Image (cartoon, rainbow, N blue to C red):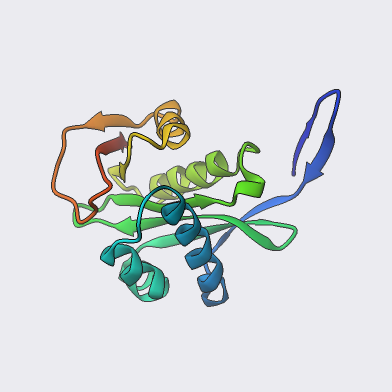
Length: 165
């Protein structure tokens, strides 16, 4: 449970980070489409992945975590398996109504914990420098910048990595 208060406002909410189940598919898609469309345009790789997260991520050795507040999906993140045993952190989204309450940090921490439990050598991220809050969170949690590389995403201009061993 996460609690927060100040002089003007006091609220408490229960946040659960759970493994993806097929019934989470529509929420995973909606959360990601919302943030991508707000800042960019959906790209072919987005459409392909969001149409079948089970097949494109989970069935290929990856993981997806959903952030649930009172049973409602307010965030998500995927770990896409890489050929070297590492994982790409992708499709991380937090509903606007839940932003600023540590949901993104909790999701990213779950990825780090899971990757360590799986003895992964690294976590990798492709993002865009205009997403300042996300990039700041990644840096605060130990991710370092990498040189540019090939990517299927036109919007990507920032590459990061967290070495785990």
